[in-house]
Length: 115
Length: 112
Image 1 (cartoon, rainbow over the protein chains, first blue to last red):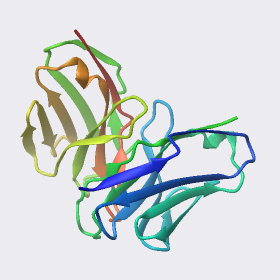
Image 2: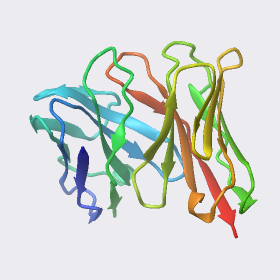
Image 3: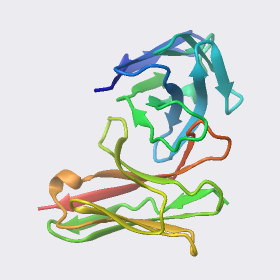
Protein backbone atom coordinates (compact mmCIF):
# COMPACT_ATOMS: atom_id res chain seq x y z
CA UNK A 1 0.00 0.00 0.00
CA UNK A 2 1.03 3.58 -0.52
CA UNK A 3 2.19 5.80 2.32
CA UNK A 4 3.28 9.40 2.48
CA UNK A 5 5.66 10.84 5.05
CA UNK A 6 6.20 14.46 5.99
CA UNK A 7 8.65 15.93 8.44
CA UNK A 8 9.06 17.64 10.71
CA UNK A 9 5.59 17.62 12.26
CA UNK A 10 6.12 20.96 14.00
CA UNK A 11 8.58 23.75 13.33
CA UNK A 12 9.19 27.15 14.88
CA UNK A 13 11.49 29.40 12.91
CA UNK A 14 12.52 33.07 13.23
CA UNK A 15 11.76 35.58 10.51
CA UNK A 16 14.49 35.64 7.89
CA UNK A 17 15.64 32.07 8.48
CA UNK A 18 15.65 29.41 5.74
CA UNK A 19 13.12 26.59 5.46
CA UNK A 20 13.21 23.06 4.16
CA UNK A 21 10.24 20.70 4.45
CA UNK A 22 10.48 17.22 3.05
CA UNK A 23 7.89 14.77 1.80
CA UNK A 24 8.38 11.22 0.53
CA UNK A 25 5.94 8.72 -0.92
CA UNK A 26 6.27 4.94 -0.77
CA UNK A 27 4.52 2.19 -2.66
CA UNK A 28 3.93 3.97 -5.97
CA UNK A 29 5.94 5.18 -8.93
CA UNK A 30 5.86 8.48 -10.80
CA UNK A 31 3.12 10.04 -8.70
CA UNK A 32 1.87 13.58 -9.09
CA UNK A 33 2.99 15.50 -5.99
CA UNK A 34 1.50 18.60 -4.42
CA UNK A 35 2.20 21.15 -1.70
CA UNK A 36 -0.82 22.81 -0.10
CA UNK A 37 -0.98 25.37 2.70
CA UNK A 38 -3.84 25.63 5.15
CA UNK A 39 -4.26 28.85 7.12
CA UNK A 40 -6.24 28.74 10.36
CA UNK A 41 -9.96 28.40 9.63
CA UNK A 42 -9.44 28.45 5.89
CA UNK A 43 -9.39 25.93 3.11
CA UNK A 44 -6.37 24.44 1.47
CA UNK A 45 -4.45 26.57 -1.02
CA UNK A 46 -2.41 24.83 -3.70
CA UNK A 47 1.16 26.13 -3.76
CA UNK A 48 3.06 23.80 -6.12
CA UNK A 49 2.56 20.61 -8.04
CA UNK A 50 4.91 18.29 -9.87
CA UNK A 51 4.32 15.64 -12.51
CA UNK A 52 7.88 14.37 -12.63
CA UNK A 53 11.49 14.79 -11.48
CA UNK A 54 12.57 18.40 -11.87
CA UNK A 55 9.13 19.48 -13.14
CA UNK A 56 7.58 22.06 -10.82
CA UNK A 57 4.57 24.29 -11.42
CA UNK A 58 3.80 27.19 -9.12
CA UNK A 59 0.22 28.20 -8.47
CA UNK A 60 0.74 31.25 -6.30
CA UNK A 61 3.57 33.82 -6.41
CA UNK A 62 5.21 33.81 -3.01
CA UNK A 63 8.30 33.52 -0.91
CA UNK A 64 8.51 29.76 -1.34
CA UNK A 65 9.96 27.33 -3.87
CA UNK A 66 9.69 23.60 -4.45
CA UNK A 67 11.95 20.93 -5.87
CA UNK A 68 11.62 17.28 -6.80
CA UNK A 69 15.09 15.75 -6.82
CA UNK A 70 13.83 12.15 -6.89
CA UNK A 71 10.69 10.45 -8.19
CA UNK A 72 9.04 10.18 -4.78
CA UNK A 73 10.60 13.11 -2.96
CA UNK A 74 9.18 16.61 -2.83
CA UNK A 75 10.80 19.50 -0.97
CA UNK A 76 9.40 22.89 -0.03
CA UNK A 77 11.93 25.62 0.64
CA UNK A 78 12.40 29.25 1.45
CA UNK A 79 15.55 31.33 1.64
CA UNK A 80 14.09 33.85 4.10
CA UNK A 81 10.87 33.20 5.98
CA UNK A 82 8.23 35.87 6.49
CA UNK A 83 5.63 36.04 9.26
CA UNK A 84 2.98 35.41 6.61
CA UNK A 85 4.56 32.03 5.83
CA UNK A 86 3.14 30.59 9.06
CA UNK A 87 0.60 27.86 8.47
CA UNK A 88 -0.04 24.16 8.12
CA UNK A 89 1.81 22.71 5.13
CA UNK A 90 0.48 19.56 3.55
CA UNK A 91 2.07 17.30 0.97
CA UNK A 92 -0.15 15.10 -1.18
CA UNK A 93 0.17 12.59 -4.01
CA UNK A 94 -2.11 11.25 -6.70
CA UNK A 95 -1.88 8.72 -9.49
CA UNK A 96 -0.23 10.34 -12.50
CA UNK A 97 -2.06 11.06 -15.71
CA UNK A 98 -3.40 14.29 -17.15
CA UNK A 99 -6.90 13.02 -17.75
CA UNK A 100 -7.36 10.89 -14.69
CA UNK A 101 -9.69 12.01 -11.93
CA UNK A 102 -7.59 10.52 -9.20
CA UNK A 103 -8.13 11.64 -5.62
CA UNK A 104 -5.33 13.22 -3.62
CA UNK A 105 -3.87 11.50 -0.58
CA UNK A 106 -2.36 13.70 2.10
CA UNK A 107 0.40 13.42 4.64
CA UNK A 108 -0.05 14.57 8.21
CA UNK A 109 1.42 17.98 7.59
CA UNK A 110 3.98 20.32 9.11
CA UNK A 111 2.80 23.09 11.37
CA UNK A 112 5.12 26.04 10.78
CA UNK A 113 5.20 29.04 13.08
CA UNK A 114 7.36 31.96 12.05
CA UNK A 115 8.22 34.23 14.99
CA UNK B 1 -17.10 34.55 -5.63
CA UNK B 2 -15.03 31.58 -4.50
CA UNK B 3 -15.22 28.58 -6.80
CA UNK B 4 -16.18 26.29 -3.89
CA UNK B 5 -18.16 27.67 -0.95
CA UNK B 6 -18.71 25.82 2.31
CA UNK B 7 -20.40 26.89 5.52
CA UNK B 8 -17.64 26.85 8.18
CA UNK B 9 -20.02 26.01 11.05
CA UNK B 10 -19.35 24.98 13.74
CA UNK B 11 -22.04 22.36 13.75
CA UNK B 12 -22.90 20.62 17.03
CA UNK B 13 -25.18 17.58 17.10
CA UNK B 14 -26.07 14.83 19.58
CA UNK B 15 -24.80 11.31 19.06
CA UNK B 16 -27.01 9.34 16.68
CA UNK B 17 -28.17 12.38 14.71
CA UNK B 18 -28.13 12.63 10.93
CA UNK B 19 -25.64 15.26 9.83
CA UNK B 20 -25.87 17.21 6.60
CA UNK B 21 -22.79 19.03 5.30
CA UNK B 22 -23.11 21.19 2.22
CA UNK B 23 -21.08 22.96 -0.45
CA UNK B 24 -21.85 24.96 -3.55
CA UNK B 25 -19.65 25.47 -6.58
CA UNK B 26 -19.65 27.93 -9.43
CA UNK B 27 -17.65 26.38 -12.30
CA UNK B 28 -19.49 23.64 -14.17
CA UNK B 29 -16.32 22.31 -15.76
CA UNK B 30 -14.55 19.29 -14.26
CA UNK B 31 -17.40 18.19 -12.02
CA UNK B 32 -15.49 15.67 -9.95
CA UNK B 33 -16.00 15.97 -6.22
CA UNK B 34 -14.42 14.68 -3.05
CA UNK B 35 -15.08 14.80 0.64
CA UNK B 36 -12.27 14.74 3.15
CA UNK B 37 -12.29 14.41 6.92
CA UNK B 38 -9.60 16.20 8.90
CA UNK B 39 -8.93 15.60 12.56
CA UNK B 40 -7.17 18.28 14.56
CA UNK B 41 -3.48 18.59 13.65
CA UNK B 42 -3.72 15.84 11.04
CA UNK B 43 -3.82 15.76 7.27
CA UNK B 44 -7.13 15.40 5.40
CA UNK B 45 -8.32 11.84 4.91
CA UNK B 46 -10.30 10.94 1.80
CA UNK B 47 -13.85 9.83 2.63
CA UNK B 48 -15.60 9.67 -0.72
CA UNK B 49 -15.34 10.84 -4.31
CA UNK B 50 -17.96 11.04 -7.01
CA UNK B 51 -18.65 12.62 -10.38
CA UNK B 52 -22.21 11.51 -11.00
CA UNK B 53 -25.42 13.26 -10.11
CA UNK B 54 -27.37 11.48 -7.41
CA UNK B 55 -26.27 9.58 -4.34
CA UNK B 56 -23.25 7.44 -3.54
CA UNK B 57 -23.21 5.47 -0.30
CA UNK B 58 -20.36 4.08 1.76
CA UNK B 59 -21.40 2.74 5.13
CA UNK B 60 -22.82 5.58 7.21
CA UNK B 61 -21.77 8.17 4.65
CA UNK B 62 -23.73 9.32 1.60
CA UNK B 63 -22.41 11.81 -0.93
CA UNK B 64 -25.02 13.62 -2.99
CA UNK B 65 -24.46 15.73 -6.10
CA UNK B 66 -27.02 18.03 -7.71
CA UNK B 67 -25.38 19.39 -10.84
CA UNK B 68 -28.41 21.46 -11.84
CA UNK B 69 -28.10 23.45 -8.61
CA UNK B 70 -24.30 23.13 -8.33
CA UNK B 71 -24.78 21.74 -4.86
CA UNK B 72 -23.00 18.85 -3.14
CA UNK B 73 -23.77 17.31 0.22
CA UNK B 74 -22.38 14.75 2.61
CA UNK B 75 -24.77 12.98 4.96
CA UNK B 76 -23.61 11.10 8.02
CA UNK B 77 -26.09 8.67 9.55
CA UNK B 78 -25.98 7.57 13.19
CA UNK B 79 -23.27 10.10 13.95
CA UNK B 80 -20.65 9.15 16.53
CA UNK B 81 -18.32 11.22 18.72
CA UNK B 82 -15.48 9.85 16.59
CA UNK B 83 -17.01 11.73 13.63
CA UNK B 84 -16.07 15.01 15.31
CA UNK B 85 -13.71 16.64 12.84
CA UNK B 86 -13.55 19.22 10.08
CA UNK B 87 -15.08 18.10 6.80
CA UNK B 88 -13.71 19.52 3.56
CA UNK B 89 -15.41 19.39 0.19
CA UNK B 90 -13.24 19.61 -2.90
CA UNK B 91 -13.75 19.92 -6.64
CA UNK B 92 -11.32 19.18 -9.40
CA UNK B 93 -9.75 22.36 -10.75
CA UNK B 94 -9.23 23.18 -14.40
CA UNK B 95 -5.82 22.55 -15.91
CA UNK B 96 -5.56 18.83 -15.29
CA UNK B 97 -3.01 17.06 -13.09
CA UNK B 98 -5.74 16.22 -10.56
CA UNK B 99 -5.50 19.61 -8.89
CA UNK B 100 -8.27 20.26 -6.38
CA UNK B 101 -10.01 23.36 -5.08
CA UNK B 102 -11.19 23.08 -1.50
CA UNK B 103 -13.98 24.62 0.52
CA UNK B 104 -13.05 26.25 3.83
CA UNK B 105 -14.26 23.21 5.80
CA UNK B 106 -17.12 22.65 8.26
CA UNK B 107 -16.22 21.85 11.84
CA UNK B 108 -18.48 19.17 13.29
CA UNK B 109 -18.83 18.22 16.95
CA UNK B 110 -20.86 15.15 17.92
CA UNK B 111 -21.53 15.06 21.64
CA UNK B 112 -22.49 11.92 23.60
